[in-house]
Length: 165
Image: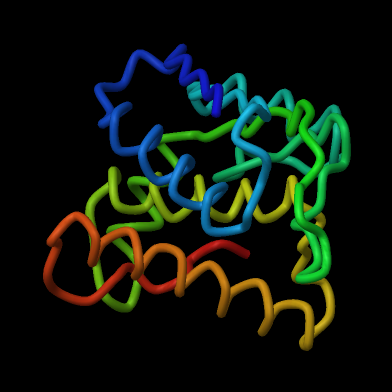
């Protein structure tokens, strides 16, 4: 799995954890091991520009996903998943820090960035949360992936509650 993390935000983040949780999420979703993913971390100003340009919405947001090859998790019948370019996930630590602090179970900026990374991966794989049933499926899968990753790393305590809107 080729995953690049490029921190352009000027904020100190746990890049290794972002890399690890992305790799765990893609393996859990059975994405081909030769697929490629890019994670870009930007400041609030850059995120706001992207948010306006692509979503026509004001202000910075927490995470944006830009799919490339529209890869999907393979069905149970498929022996070999297709490989390709997943796309880009863009994260904003400033928004992540605020969301983590304001969450029902307050958590760190890095924990929020890990959650947002999984959220972004799921968006790249075609998951969405516009409809209630889609939201339940996506957020359930997101929680299972983050919890599994945290358990594998020996992390204790509750996982961050979904703060992504």
